[in-house]
Image (cartoon, rainbow, N blue to C red; front, side, top):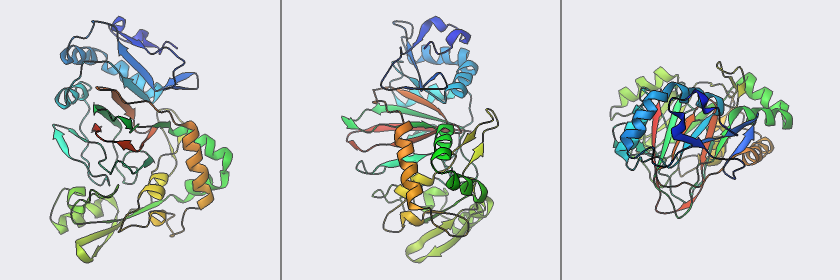
Length: 336
């Protein structure tokens, strides 16, 4: 499949991976994700890559909307600093990670680590920060250190999840669409590296001032309660679980339901109560099992290679993380 690269300036410099590939699937006649690789000797440095990106950024954004995700493989981007320059080539505004649950560290510029949950913990599928009213539009992940085993970042097209769930459990989908969902979480004072949702309230809200935390919660429509040991319990405003994407007109499974239900459990949190309907009703266990199976049937997996960069439209695609053997370092940038 050619990947429609005829609109790219200097398109003779790149090529798409020839299908079929075990790291791609076809949806609506298009490969997912689109994989771009440089033709030999056309990109000798990260500066060459940045220059090419700047000429083609608008067309690449169109390809992203068309395919949902793009894997850039084999480009000479060999460090976090160069990855930062790669992302900045697109002229997106950086998105501050305020309200997210994952423990992370800033590396340089707008680059920080991906979720640093322990390697034996699966991170289920989610749209980035779907549990808060404001979320990033575009995500970038960069492979700085590929793991010796596991550690894939599976991807799923959100509209395909919606269509599959509508066929398998229409009543569940209609109830979600009608009622929406709320997310419940108890945060520690300081970050807890043993938990997949161990981000403390200080780093979550980027302040040590309780009053400022309360103000930020109020701005998001989040109710809160201070608990013993300086923990904070939050309950979000009702958020949509199904959205119609304005650019495509398609309905998307835009939520973090399965991520919360399967992954938001630790010494402070009961995962089965992490996401509920607004009236407090829990998610039906059978429906969640169906949903988990749908994700597995639709997901694509690719093995991280050094310097791989994945660009994801966060409104169209959900991502996950598989367990792995250390070392592994995947870096991220979030964009408005």
